Length: 172
Ligand SMILES: [Zn+2]
Image (cartoon, rainbow, N blue to C red; front, side, top):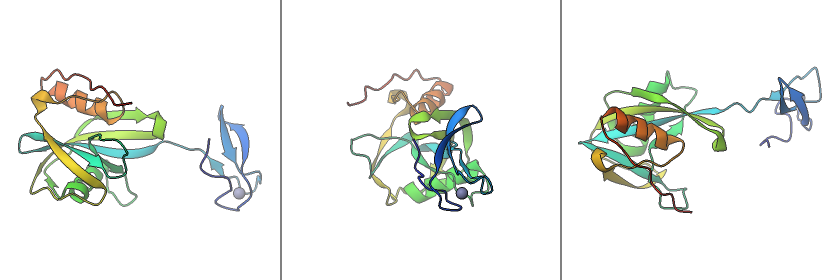
């Protein structure tokens, strides 16, 4: 499965070919040499801690009522993932993060992403950015995690704080 049907360099139709031990889509023109490697995209995620609570937010584009971590694509102009996650927290919640404490990295194969997760202590007044529709405050002692992607980052951070979080039943 690929998002590209045509070579982004020379516009020839891409063809399926085995390269590096896996099926790829590549340009048939050897002189062009373009290969759509389809590498995972890095995404930064934040467990935002604000006034003693964890802030979970709902993305305006999500169809179901699900609250998750603050996430965003790492951008080319971000000097580092740490600064990228602080930028996202500022853009999406209007909060100033005082640190980006690395929690771990988590594969998210369904979206072909690699999630780089941080704990971000933050201050200020929450003003939602346009990507978010609502947020909620969760007491870390009562927080539950969703079994996948960023949910494991929340679980691992909670465990690091000495809590024993339980998994959430996801609506089907
Ligand atoms: Zn080409």
